[in-house]
Amino acid sequence: MEAFYRTHSYLVDHTNAPVRRDLMDEIDWNDRLIGIKGTRGVGKTTFLLQYAKEKFGVDRSCLFINMNNFYFSNNSIVDFAGEFVRRGGKVLLIDQVFKYSDWSQELRTCYDKYPELKIVFTGSSVMRLKEENLELRDIVKSYNLRGFSFREFLNLQTDMKFRAYSLDEILQNHEAIAKGILSKVQPLNYFQDYLHHGFYPFFLEKRNFSENLLKTMNMMIEVDILVLKQIELKYLSKIKKLFYLLAVNGPKAPNVSQLAIDIQTSRATVMNYIKYLADARLINMIYPVGEEFPKKPAKVMMHNSNLMYTIYPAIVDEQDVLDTFFLNTMYKDHKLYKGDKNSSFLVNNDMPFKISANTQRLKVNPEVTYAIHQMEIGKENQIPLWLFGFLY
Image (cartoon, rainbow, N blue to C red; front, top):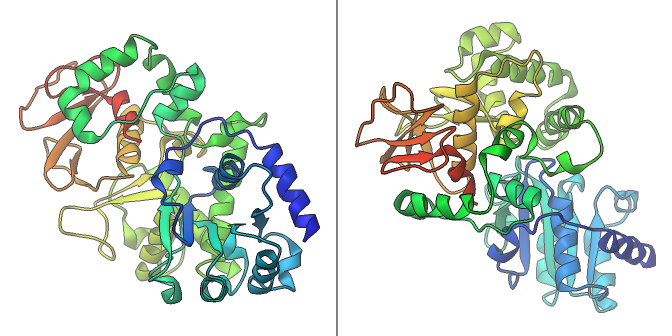
């Protein structure tokens, strides 16, 4: 146990979160079992350590453990938690909980057996905490940690502390909001950098970003999909090929029959693989209003623009990048559907949005809201695209 305390102390001392994530204040920390999901690379480990540092400092009533530790190949979470509680432990932070085979059953046992203990754990975005783990359905509170928003990226690059705005605030007050931000920084000077490498916090590391992201993308498929969905290793190459084909084909409706031929499997399996890739936050599926999986999506897009620049050969169409940014930033709190001939997306079933690279040849429709690139300050129903990066 002392070895775990020493590791915890070292990690907390050396944690330097560059941006304080808003999720820290959105979570109800009074709950006894809290799950924090997120795609690989968005900073879940750092988030746990930041919580420990901010709330507990050197207090030994809080302990961080990682299920990568070989100790847990021969020792149970329940027994470890019991020893921790006997030593005065109050809050157990468990990173990568899915690495432990019977994690959900053990967390349920801990919940029932140690009522004075709070457990906060991290897991993959592929996990369905309540749908697939019935023993946790009535006790776990689940949250999602996302990659950096453009606002968080801008704050980091400029040492500013701009706050987030709701969609209603942006729609009603976008001119005043934009003027306030522009009085301090020029957001468009940073926007392309964000589109290229700003979503994943590891861009701050002194390593090649694209190589790091490629490694992360492979881990999403090899671990988050294969391990959690219990898919045999021999099918790995098929899933990777499918992802590559979807990426290089660009945002459009997938030809499921052709994809089935290309990766030598059935149409049903192709659709399941597409769903797994979406769960892993590698792609997004866009449907017409009223439709959903398992129907074929109207469009498959990359989950965020950073991924688009990492696929080789890089076929990066500006309009596709802008559409992907809008979808990704809206994804946290809003539902997007396929737009009609006059719009790119239908937001929340009732708001048509058109994403435009500029105002040239733009025929403004009063029924549509326009998110426009290369615009600093908007007017009426024309809003700078970058400002939607302040939604979280």
